[in-house]
Image (cartoon, rainbow, N blue to C red; front, side):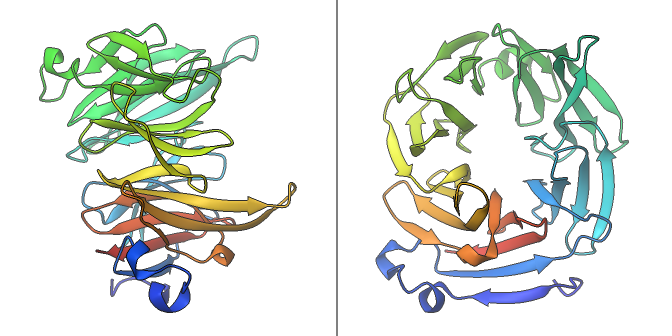
Amino acid sequence: MKHYVFLRNAILLCALFCTQGLVAQVFSSVSMDTIPVPGMEFSRPVGFMPDGRSLLLTTATQAGLWLYGMENQSLRQLTDALGAGSEPAVSADGSSVIHRTVSFNATHQRLMALDVLDMTNGKADRLLQPQRQVPAYRFAENTAMAVCPAGEQVYKVRGMAQADASRMPVVSLNEDLQLAVTEGGATRVLSPNGTEATYLWPSLSPDGSRVLYYVSGVGAYVCNIAGDGVTFVSHDCRAPQWFDDETIVGMYDTDDTKVLTSSCIMAYTLDGKSQQLTSPSSFTMYPRCHAASGRIACCTADGRLVVVHAER
């Protein structure tokens, strides 16, 4: 912390957000740091490294991926690949990162490949060849897993047997934007809110038992891995992320149909509590969470890096 050159803004929720009652609080105290990122005009966090002290950053267009050390303000570009900043995945030991690589074919159709970047030597290994549809992927501990549109799984094994990895669920969206889960090489469509709904931002809970997702125009929900036990989280929780197995963090943004008028970071628990973590006038958006350190990274509309510190 002493190495930061930042604007320290202490935010005490009871004082600043009096509309949030004590009963509704998710965290007991919250503070916020605006942290400079020398060398990047626009920095959007897209993931924490396992130690919670480093972040993966990308640009406004999600082109390229950088590793940023918050304590010493070190910045290292990992790749300049198009699409690399769109939902990268980090292995449990922090040694590898899966990222997307976008290219175009001779007829200008958009293709997407998956690469596994070795953080120790900077080399990338192709996990999935370029294809038209968006694949799903994750790390099961340190095993990189990808699901092709047809449901066939591809593995890059690091310390886990392929048979064990195949039992780890992978959440995806199919071409109709329906929620799907692949396990053991078989993909099933869930559609927990009906096939007429459009699903966005799906993710597995840290314990792998539930799925968080957003229904376009409606709000955020959680369901069991089987697609039942649907729990409503909030209408005002876009780009939702798991903080832990019982806590969701997302953004509540408003506009006048032309421009963004406000945006703040919100926290919710599955038993109905909610809390506003940043001011709507801060224009903070797209949170990423690291529960062990209590940190929530996000960016402002103009690309400044913000880290929220939340304590239970």
